[in-house]
Amino acid sequence: MSAETYTFDDLAVVMGTYNEEAAVGTVLDDIAAVTDDRAEVVVVDSSDDDTPEIARERGATVIEQPPRGYGEAVREAVLTPDRPVVVTTDCDDTYPMEALPQFLDRIEEGYDVVSGDRLYYGADAMPPFNRLGNVAFALLASLLLAERVHDVTTGMRAYRRELLHEIEWTENTGLSAELLLRPVARGYDVVEEPIEYRERAGETTLDPLSGGFDIARSILRVCYEEQFG
Image 1 (cartoon, rainbow, N blue to C red):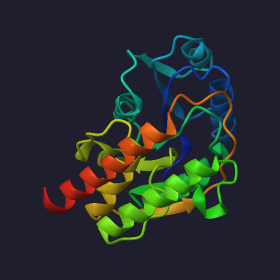
Image 2: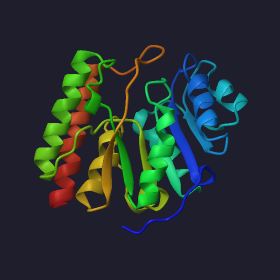
Image 3: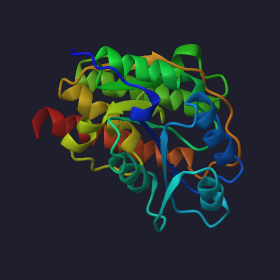
């Protein structure tokens, strides 16, 4: 790994949003506080509430699109910034923005992807059914890739920008898993970094059963394509 030096001026934090007016302001305020308001923020939004207005008031670049799913929004978000380090996060205040300097340090060490591992500390704020599903997803992906991964659906990761443009991203609901599994399968330098996970603010729009099925199917498809495609 070849190390480079990065500052918050090299950082973009991106997210897809859908009716997250209860939390998005807090998340953006936290990003600004941690990075001295130097990080670029990109929000791809499909809301019919005040989420985009709240984001714009805090200086974020807001890209509005019709509701087409998680993957469509996040794919647009990760491919938009010009800054060399791109961090994904969710807009529900579950992820610790205070971990941003730690993620940037790991990229500076030479890693291509730094993936936040929520399960390391137990993810007690996560509903038990969701936690069990995430453990199962990680075990399935580890078996298929023959390499141990611990949290394949985390929404908080840091990437070197060029990696995001070198890989074609194809999944929707399962994009969070794809964003880890394809780099792992292709031999990029990936590290999982333990992070705390908080109870979400506002209501979730993801059905755990149908969403879980879609994620499992994405894991199977992505791992098959990487092994045999």
